[in-house]
Amino acid sequence: MPEVAAAPALAAALQALQRVFGYSEFKGPQQVIIEHVVAGGDALVLMPTGGGKSLCYQIPSLLRAGVGIVVSPLIALMQDQVAALKEAGVRAAFLNSSLSAGEAASVEAALREGRLDLLYVAPERLLTERCLAMLSRIPIALFAIDEAHCVSQWGHDFRPEYIGLSVLAERFPDAPRIALTATADAATRQEIVKRLALDDARCFVTSFDRPNIRYRVVEKDDPRRQLLAFIKEGQSGNSGIVYCATRAKVDQTAGFLHEQGIGALAYHAGLDGQTRSEVQARFQREDGVVVVATIAFGMGIDKPDVRFVAHLDLPRSVESYYQETGRAGRDGLPAEAWMAYGLADVVQQRRFIDASDAEPAYKRVAGVKLDAMLAFCETPECRRVCLLDYFGERSVPCGNCDNCLLPPETVDGTVVAQKFLSAVYRCEKASGFPFGAQHLVDVLRGAATEKIRRFGHDALPVFGAGGDISVKEWRSVVRQLTIAGLVQVDTERYNSVMLTQASRAVLKGESPVSLRRWREASPTAGRRRGASGGGSGAGSGGRDAALAELDPSAAEVFQRLRAWRAQQAQTAGVPAYVIFHDATLREIARNQPKDRGELSAVAGVGARKLESYGDVLLRTVAGA
Image 1 (spheres, rainbow, N blue to C red):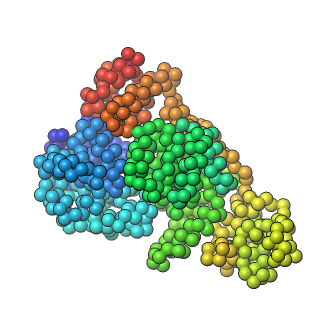
Image 2: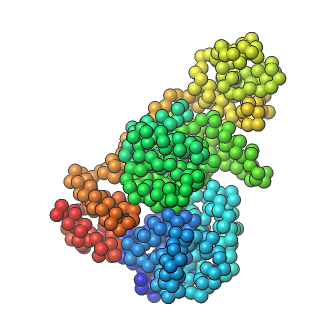
Image 3: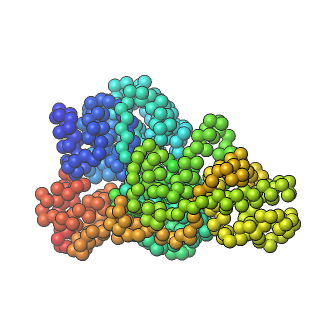
């Protein structure tokens, strides 16, 4: 592709944006970032998934002399982006372990001979002396470090090999470096700057808001059944990701969904490489595939039409949650982030932190991050406000989360809290050791269990004092008291519940307690259609989302275009979205262009794609 650096930077950037990628204007701060990097400046870019981070290094790579080197942590991300760039007419390639020796040699030859605009490479390969020496002999346009949060030990996807990338500043001082991520709190940003020697880099932080995603949290009550109802009642036939904490739970959940008629596949590190590759390929190239996975799945997946992300276990931090839920709705159409959450999640995450061999400072940070995640789950306020506040962004209630659509009620829970705290104290005093939450609830409800009779707890004054409160309500109370620091669970002593120093003031009536009132939540609670903040049809099924606001004629054209795209993608051996995103097909269907001139005005139709697909698209629109 000819270099256009001779033109003024902005004009050249706009020309590349339109000619190569088919868009007429930049989004948000893209223009400022691109101009800064084209001029040779370093940058740290925080931009939400789907916000257009890639263009911030792809266009400067086309405008500056030399080749842009993109450091990417996953093979899938490289393959997707290179395939999409080639479709757009960009000379791009990748170097990773998926290539044969001959294929790798061919890419290296193209690099040496100046036949590449962009090269994607894994950090471990880049840092070999052989690769660094090869790069030192060619002009480098820039280094882009994608998924930069991987460099931070405080982050959620720490990759030790990323630490070595500071060598780029030493070996290539004249090449600008741009680090990009969708998720980083203040501590993680500082770590990125320090580890990558980006002290003089300009920091660009855009809004973390993803208004098309509806956030919902439900209390666990047979979570697999709750998940099934969530999918069948609103996401049937859609692509989605379900996250579980363990491999065993992944296998069990995937098997359960498959038995219930959901096209679910398991993905975790215990599967062989070929199986994992096949699952990932099916997810990327087929419609309606649901992947049940550990957190190892998803980073770098470029699939834009994931309609939901579900969690059956609590993420360990808000960063993890934001990164994982951000894999839904990258196309900007309505999507859902659903999570089932219970007291066992709190106990499990605390156990993970306590059992870790990490330094005390790391454990303290992990505890703070977990507390923030728990606060998000229990907040009676707008979830989006809570989420954005974590990243230092102020906002207003969104109208597109479960708490906004069905506002929870908070009540004075001082007496209820005192009953439970008293049960903790009296049971331990009577027997000489603490008890678990279930036993304490049984005592409060006056249950006639053998364990209660054996320890004589039916003679305590708290026995039956909470019989007017259901077991599910008591679980909510225990969870909230744990998060508030009024009780703690000892994971070393059979998950026994013990009082904390703060509980004394509550027992003495010196400190009131506010509780979120428990309520039975249906799988579709908070899924009201057309709510503000998420667009028309927010939370509805993905096919409805893709067809939303299209009249019958346009919807018919859209379906024809999607069928053509599926066939073309199969022939080319690439995911359908590499050919065109749904958003582009929707605009073609809505405008129904009559000639190439009108077609070229559609966002996402660049010069190369117009040349390759223009005639067949026009015929498809016309129904010929």
